[in-house]
Amino acid sequence: MSGQLFIVPTPIGNLEDITLRAINTLKSVDLILAEDTRTSSFLLKHLQIEKPYRSYHQHNEHQVLEQIVDMLKTGKNIALISDAGTPGISDPGFLLIREAIVNDVNVITLPGATAFVPALVNSGFPCNEFCFYGFLPQKKGRQSKLKLLALEEKTFILYESPFRLLKLLEELKEYLGPARRASVSRELSKLFEETKRGTLEELIAHFTVKPVKGEIVVVVRGNKESKHEETE
Image (cartoon, rainbow, N blue to C red; front, side, top):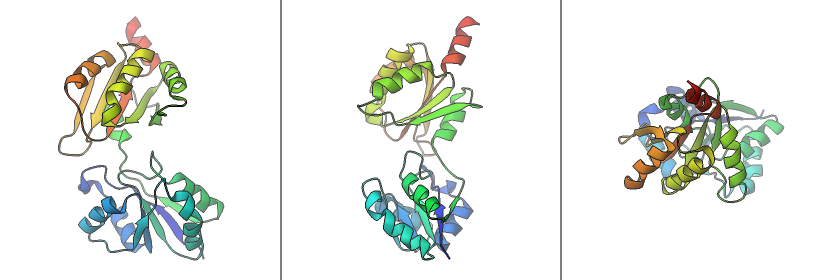
């Protein structure tokens, strides 16, 4: 019988956010696939989990995919984790999950941490409907995506590096207008967690004098809601 592939979310910062089910799953599998074994070894040691683990990331996933699927088909139970959050959400995972499904391997995805959910809820913008865009293309297709975002009626979410945050905010200001409201969250669940809300103009002024570190989630109010506010 085939083994099972477990998609296991890991904490985005605070290690106490790991679930009991995630711990028990990692303790039970035959192998753990980790985006960065150096990062994951710290977590596994903290959780007192001693299981074989190997790297699985965007630079080697095509090369090792067939071998991993063969292991699953011969009965091995394997867990996939990323550096932080849920695998597949702006992290490696999609290719392996798709290939496992094609080969009739049972895929079990555990619920757990992902950065955009607390950032979205904490923004104060409508979150009954929203769009997640992850990281924008660095070059090809970036302008087209920004034009699309200018028309997006729902609240939308972006990921960004702290080194490129100001560039992103400037581009959003250019395409969406300086008065569009947004929320920038960083270091979610960590000691220096911070969320700054305001217009794009205000956020640019703030982060120009206050450089940031850590992973960044940008939540932007949708075009429809912004127009509604303007007419009130």
